[in-house]
Amino acid sequence: MTYPAAPTLSPDDVRRRLREGEEIALLDLREEGPFAAGHPLFALNLPLGRIEERIAGLIPRRDAPVVLYDDGEGRVARALPVLAVLGYSQVAVLEGGLAGWRQSGGEIFIDVNVPSKAFGELVEHVRHTPSIPARELHDRIARGDDLVILDARRFSEYTVMSIPGGRSVPGAELALRVRDIAPSAETTVVVNCAGRTRSIIGTQSLVNAGIPNPVVALRNGTIGWTLEGLALDRGATRRAGDATPGNTALARQGAAALAERTGVRAIDAGGLRALAADPARTVYRLDVRSPEEYAHGHLAGFRSAPGGQLVQATDEWIGVRHGTIILTDDDGVRARMTAHWLRQLGWREVYVLDDWSSLPRETGPEPSLLAAPLPEVETIAPSDVAALGDGVWVIDLATSPEFRKGHVPGARFAIRADLPGHPALTDVRDVVLTSPDGIAARLAAAELVRASLRVRVLEGGTQGWRDAGLELESGFDPATALSGTDDVYKRPYEGTDNAAAAMQAYLDWEFGLVAQLERDGTHGFSVLE
Image (cartoon, rainbow, N blue to C red):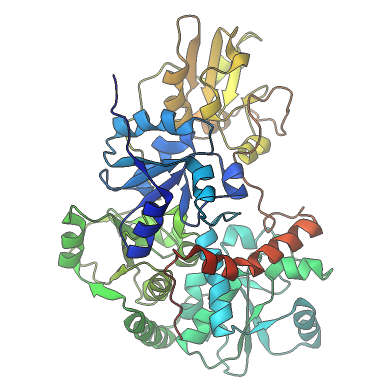
């Protein structure tokens, strides 16, 4: 099958569409490591080998305008037929790729989730968000001052490392629960994250919501605490309790006022159906409650996107800049608090859906959103793989951190996009592919089949191996790996083994983001004053 050549779009045209509010998805097809080393502000990282797994959630409308680029690795040419098969019909190629963007004067940003991080710095710059240095907070804790410490990150991040005495209150939960955590207006509320963004946004959320308490961000989060030589808690499990009805009503009033000030619109079931039926819109339906609440029961067709994390990493859910966003919750607070930030982040159409009464519901965690049915492949049971001889290669398509944590003994790590034509496979005759849930392995199997190579997929993936009671091994052997580990960017603010120099460099980078935004000129951010 042949495919028509894709048209090109100049960097200037991309920037014009961003400034004028037209829908556009700018996709960087490289792995996350190279992406984090440099990309346009609103580029979305969608590695070539993950397209089928992720694109349906990020770009649900198949005729949305999509622009592809790489940095000369040839990934665009390989992605075009994939997107054509999946039904994406409005695909263009960025003229000159990343180099063309740079040569045209386009600003280059490093790291990941940069729009949200740059926005956080802009919020602090405009609103002068109050903060407290780590040493001062440490001394106030030691004195027994009247204060509470609220960690605005995901619980999974909080429990790895946290400020002593802090409790987990992910960002969208802050305005809903703070009055019950700190019922006295004299209690100082300290909001922290690992670095800066969620501390700033969480603190400013409470200021915007008009709570009577003094509120401050922990300056530079757990990074600042660590650089000061202070010890962090490990494995903490403290969480906020439920909000009482009276305090929920107060929080709802504040959130409603903020939503009105920022242009958030409320819709009912009819409005939801009308937006979803508009063929010219890319619509995102997102439930901003906790994953646990979502699993207990949610509206059909809505994805789980906890509000604080959605503001922190909007590009992990929303791939089309200037798409239409519909948020929902069951309390009238979290969706509106999240929506008022998304409006300031330049999303022009943000709606909140309150009334669930006439809409279908579902239970359980969010299902995988595959862009096409999985192909039929030959499979092999875990017990049969365990009995195979040395002539069979087990290849694992997990991310490199997942691979390190646990893989089938003897498995070789690989990035899916590296497998077709890989020289190490020239003389291999039998391959078993696996991945955490088996999906990436099934997608990759057809790409490897050739006359002299038998390809099978481990039933149930690596989880199936674990479920069969078979042991995994940990670690990473570069000598047997078929790919490097640039598939995942090592964040300087995650984990417990970060070098002080890397953490300080990260902070220095964040401090410079406001100047980068001014040079870039495409962001459309508007901070509430």
